[in-house]
Each structure stands twice: as C-alpha cells, then as structure tokens.
Amino acid sequence: METIALAFALARKIEEYDSKKKVTILYEVIETAPSETVVIDGVKYQRSLNFTGKIDTYFAEYLEILNHYKKLTEIDYEIRYQYEFNEQPETLEVFKTVLKNREYVAKKLDQKYGNLRVRMSCPICGLTDKNSVNNVYSENTITFYCPEHGEYSINVNEGISKLEYNSPLRNLIRGMSYTATNQSADYDFEILRITGSDYAGFYQEELRYKVASYLGCKVSDMSMIFYAPLVLDWSGAKLSKSLYVKEGAYGDIPKRFINYSFLKEDLGFKGLDILYDIVINWINNPYMLFRHYSIYYFIKEFEKYE
Ligand SMILES: [Zn+2]
Image 1 (cartoon, rainbow, N blue to C red):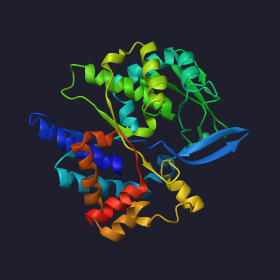
Image 2 (cartoon, rainbow, N blue to C red; image 1 turned 45 degrees about the vertical axis):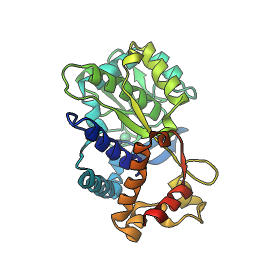
Image 3 (cartoon, rainbow, N blue to C red; image 1 turned 90 degrees about the horizontal axis):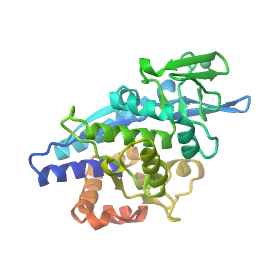
C-alpha cells in the first residue's frame, strides 16, 4: 500500500513540477505468482493465483485502493498482466537474447539449481515445475513436463504470453524490456519502475546490471528504479503478513496496520488519505526516501494525522 501511495504521490509531483509531462501509473500484476505448492517424485510444483482463481479474492481491494488514489491525485492508472507484458515486442526480443545465453543467465541468476527459471503451467491441470528442473531446450522451443500429463512445449517465435519467470529472471527481463521501450522511437513515453527497497543494492548490481551488460544492454541507458522505503517490524525485518497470520508475532501492532480491510473498517478511506499525506511528505523532503521506517513510525504518524 505504501508503494502504491508513493507511486501516485511521485506522479502528482512530476506533473506539478513539469506541466508538459503527463504521468500514468502502469500497475504490473503477476497473476502467475504461486497459490499452492506440491511435491511429486521429489520435484516441486506450484499452481498460480490465476489458475486457482485466488487472484480474484484480493483484486477488488487493489482496485479500490487504486481508484481512491486516482480520485485523490487525478493521476490515471492502467493494469497490465504478465501475459500482456510478455506480448510486448521488446519483451520477446529480450527473452530470445536470454534464451541464447541461457547457460550464463542460469549460472548467474540461479546459483542453487543452475537452471534458467522459466516456467509454463500444464495446459490441462495447471501444475508448474517451480525450479524448472525438467525443462528441455532446443533452438526456439522449450519443452516442459507435467507428472500427470507428460510433455508440452512452446515455440518462442509463436509468442511467449504463457511464460512465467522467477523473481530474479523477471527482474532482469523487465529491466531490459523497459530499457528497450525507453530507447525506442516508437513510444512517446518512458517507464520508471517503482518497487520496494528489498530489491535495491546487491540484488540489482549482481542480478540486473552486470547480467544485462553481458547480454548487450547498455547499462548507462538502463531504465530507472525508484525505491520505496521498507516497512520494518521490531527486529528490523520487513513486516511480513504471513508471519503475522502464522505466528501471531505482531501482537502489539494494531490490526489496522496489518491488513487493508481492518484499516478501512477503522478509518474508511481516511486511512488511505493519511498514508498519502505521510508519503507526500517524504517526496517533499527527498532525504526521507533514503531510509526505512518501522511500523511504529506509521502508528505515531497516524496518531498525528487522525
Ligand atoms: Zn498436467
């Protein structure tokens, strides 16, 4: 929520700063994120949020948040699913480059298994080989394996809309695809990515810039990333909703700071307005963007604004 609020606040600020600029939020949805995991014959398989339909459970809340901030800031947004990102011609070109250099990319991005972490779910049952252990490659074709339904393949020349990537590979492909878009004369816009600071630093240096450079992407032209400060718990770890649910680890934190539905129950849309006020203050005082915040900071700030 903090990252979404920050995206709208930054967009508003850019438009105020330069009235000739028009900013739109492009909300990239990873509908292929795992929803459930099973192990069959020692191989890990997952089914996606999309396949299980769980994506719909929370999507209405996301839309409510996006629509509220759109109204507040007069900044428009669009939603792009991963299959649509994959349909971009720039993404296909990047993927072909990755495929050609798959041994290098696999070694760099997947130190544990040494696999190119590309997946496609079984067209019949949705099972997806999480660690890409049974993938077989030929020049333009990738063959995947389902323990129940056998082999199925994709020819990349016929489109890659059905492909999925693990986080480091997706991060690399995104970075290179956004860069190609920004460098292309076919578009009258540029993409600036906003994401959480947990992906800043070592992750980008080793897994994005160095690998992209090896693959022929000019690093000095690469698309910019704007990092949202992290929200930390008492131990300095990123606040984790699953930890809260599983372990009850955050007994001292009011529920409204854990879950959007509780925030709405307590404060209505005022909760989103307060969050926006907090992050616009960071944008107006940019040094405040180069640090992280504990959840207790938000508790104190909410007291101030309420
Ligand atoms: Zn299957």
